[in-house]
Image (cartoon, rainbow, N blue to C red; front, side, top):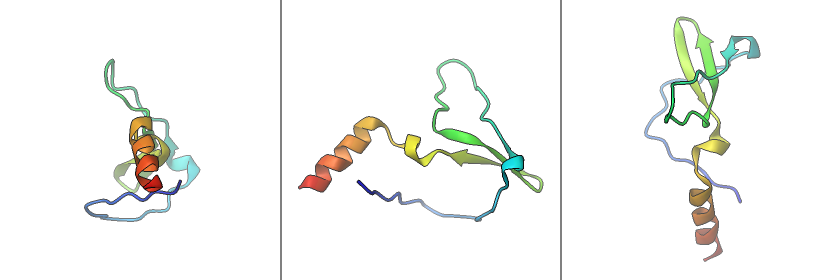
Length: 70
């Protein structure tokens, strides 16, 4: 099933090389970071890279699939 994600806005699109990406930090107990793929360093900014496959929960994906059948 193919789905799209609507976002409020996009401020910038960047090409980030593999050497500029660090693993996602652990923020402590109880904070889910499974949807964070890593942190990208671009110039003087740190950008959070999302794992789009992990952003939606399995329950949400099942709901989308059910709606697509209708």
